[in-house]
Image (tube, rainbow, N blue to C red; front, side):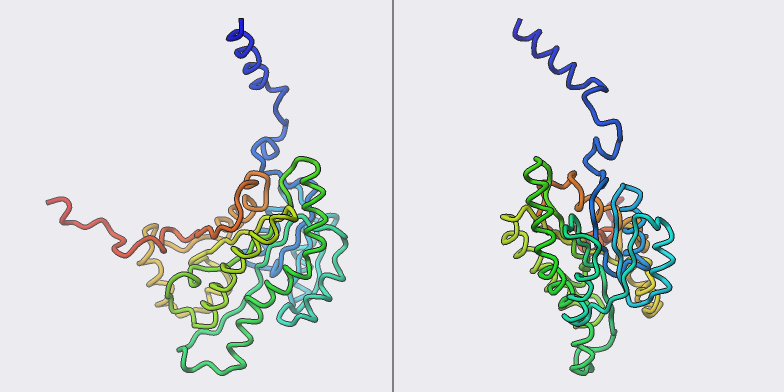
Length: 290
């Protein structure tokens, strides 16, 4: 009798009526009703992430320095996409951005804005180092701290409802864990971002906030198109998958880490790099066939 009862319970749990109707909701990937801020949201990875978030049901605020590019993205969903012109390379600019958000709660923060200058370590001027480090890392730190009250409010509310809390996703780089010819300040800023991810994940878990990083390398974005063509060719040669990644291949992991599907994941750096960071000899040797 007991076995029969268990079978009946299992059958009911597998029935269509017991499952959410929406496939994204059933998988935990739905972002319906979530409020998200995506920095650098007007192009590249930021724009692709914004479009994916919107398609998954989120309401999204995007920011960048260029108003025209922001407006183009906002028109994709004028009722659920908010465009804010902001310069995040200063703490003042970050605070101004927080003041312009249309909500008092924030479910998702994607720290994506970034810049780069490529040259030898000994050739950097102090101002150049500061520009790269402030735009990439300090903006991430300033914004995460400034957004904490909003994230905390959303996180505690969702936890009370028995759901995954708020989420922060930092966009770092393979440059943060190994040498690539991308410039010393860029690499240092991304390594700092990954360490901040680990620290905040521990400290902010008490608020119901998960913090993770996505580390791309190398992706076909406007930033990498400014690099030397030989750099791009060498990157492809080093990758087992033999190509640059596409922006949608980064947006999907960002959405995953932002969603309930990743409810037990925090403090992690996910390398999305076509196998770059795990290879030294990246080709199957011909002598294996002998």
